[in-house]
Structure formats: C-alpha cells, structure tokens
View 1 (cartoon, rainbow, N blue to C red):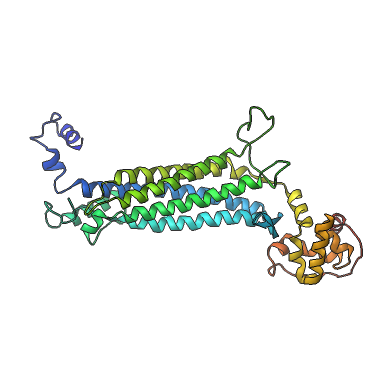
View 2 (cartoon, rainbow, N blue to C red):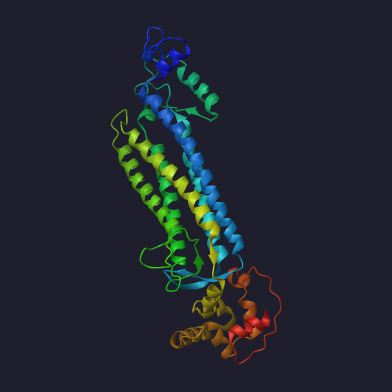
Length: 379
C-alpha cells in the first residue's frame, strides 16, 4: 500500500516496482517484528492519552458534586450496616480521588510503552539493518510524533516481551473495577424511590419498564458496569496472549492490540457518558439523609465521647428495642442539652471530628424534647 501510494506521488503507475519496491525500498531494514510493535506502542500511547482526558472529565464531575453536597449529612455504611455520620460531599469526593489516583497509575503504565524495538528486525539482532539504523529511525519517530521514545537496551528481549502490555491491561482493569464499584454505589444509593435507600436521584434517561408505569432504571451506571466487565475479560485475553509467546517472538500481539484498544476506547466513552448523562444531574434527598442520621444507631458512636461508653450502649439498646431515634432518647434522658446536641450534630462536627471550630455552648440538661424542634429552635 505504501509503495503504491509513493509511486502515485512520484508519477508512476501502481505496481511499477522497478521504480519503488515494497520490500527493497519501503521495508528496507525493517521487519514486521519490529515495525508492527513500534506502531502498536505509539497508537496505544495516543489512545491512553484520550482515556486520561475522559477520566479527568469524570473526576471533575464528581469533584463538583462533592463541593455541592459538602454540607449534606448522611450515614456512612460498612457491610451495608449503619456506621458513622459523614457528608454526601465526602462520599462523592472519594470517587474523584479514586479517578485521580488511577490517572496517575495509567501515566506510569504508559511510560513503559515509550521503549521501542525498531531496528531489531527479525528477532532483535538487527540483521539486514545498517549500523546506526535504530538510532536514526528513533530520532525521526521522535520528530514526527513528539513522543520521548527510546530504543530498548536489549532488542532481543524487547522483540519477544509483552510485559508492558500486560502491565497496562492490568491498570485498565484496575480503572474498570473501581469505576464499576462507583456505579454500584450510585445504583444502590438511588435505589427505590420508596422501597430502597433513595438517598440520591439519578437523572432519568428513559422509561424503565413497559409494564411498570413510572419506573426509571439506572441505565447509565449499568452500561458502565458492562463496559467494566468487558475490560476485565480483555485483561484475561491479554494475559493469555502474552503468555502464549514462544522463544524469540510473540505471534499474538494482534489480539493484544485488539483487546487493549477495545478496553481503552470503551472506557473513555463510558467515563464521558457517566459524567455527562448521570453524575452532573445527580440530586440528593437531604431531608431523608438527615433524618436517617438522627435515627441511626450509628449516631451513638459519634456521641460516645460526650455521654460515655456505658450510657451510649444503653441508648443504643433502647433505640433498637423501641424503634426511636438516638438523638431523641439522649434528650429525653437529659444526657446532653438541646443546644449542645444541635452543635454536635452539625455536619462539620460529625463529618470532620476534631477539625471543626469549637465554640462554647451552654450545656443545660433538659429532660425531655424532640430533635426536630431542637434543630428548628437552635438553627
């Protein structure tokens, strides 16, 4: 193809190989075994750059929501059980941080692909290439691509080794697993709207059912989950293809490239769709999340330093047996004054213990009262 295009540009007919020959001229000093892997490396580097850009879009979307939801209190959960209070902003900040960490791992992995084996020819000995060819070819590639490419120090090793691809595929799997876990969280937090957690609302994209009116499914997180499943499967393919190489060459790089390209392009699209069609439109049911904190048994852990372990244990038992809220019972037993309790239940105090500015609050014990009226009265 290259030879015939060159012949056209030179004013000759296609196939006039006496003027320009595919092997004698175009492929001079090269082999499929060094030209093809070098091209694969360069193409993959460019593709990974596009994925990193898409991950930054999703990271920024989560970071913006973290800021928007920074003052909204909710219960954290471990093993799907009430844990301790946090803010919705902290929850969303976690997703942004994970993406930022994975972008750095991706940059580290792609650095390995800047090592090329052009000039190795058939198996790495450089047979049929003139002295200095590898360095001359590398310099030209650097000028054309603008990439800091380097020639592998051992071309025989570089021609047979696919370790850089295995490493990159593993990082892609890491990205997929963590983004998929994030989507699991979004689906769980938005479950309901009445019989699930119902803490957040995902923007509706389509009707969720042809038989259940009003049903809206979390289709964007679900499609991202499916992309993640594909990436995880592609990692197995890359692993087996890299392992299947024999002696001085791996003949299975085509399926490695096919798998990597699929993982990279689909992950990039998934990140952008998740950001644009889902995350940016998320809202929070803040009244519900606040009420859950006030009723949760987990709240007693946050108040343990104020009332002591023994009293906290008794309050937790009574709350469980009676179905009443922890805050309500603490006020009823006069363990903390309404003013002090309102102060302790501020989001900045519960979600950032030890960092919120402490202001003296009168600690007048009041034997009875309801948390709702206390919050209203204390602002």
